[in-house]
Amino acid sequence: MSKPVYAVSTHNMFIITLSILSYAKWNTPTPALCVIDNPNYALQFNQAIRLQGYHYKISSIRLNELDKSSCNAIFLSTFSPQEEQKIIHSQRQDPPLSFSSTNQTCEIGSAFCLYTRNNNTSFKVNLDSLSQSKVRVDPRVLLLAKVTEQ
Image (tube, rainbow, N blue to C red):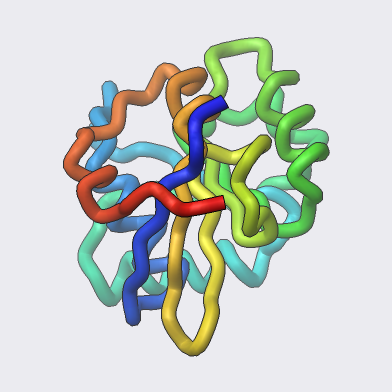
């Protein structure tokens, strides 16, 4: 298992997530980010899009709607890492690019794990999960991060 990598920024997790998405190669002009079981976060993503000028479609969906949705990326904020892992691997299609705000170790589950500490938003990258997603992310996003000591 590869070690997670991380980066730190003074921006909030919504701006950081949208910035990471901008490093991905999409087969659609307006990628869809589905926020699972957290309508408040979906509203905050939409506010960030308006402020920053990104072109993403943000949807607030329930977990039981995920299989019927066309999500290029998902944001998980109410699940344990084990639940994230199960959700990601249960997708009939290729696993979407996944983000979490509740998975600080980032050893299983989502590809990108965001957290806030001392008013700084940080993220770790689970390279194993990232490689399972069929979405290709420009390696320059990894230059924002460094390998953590565990």
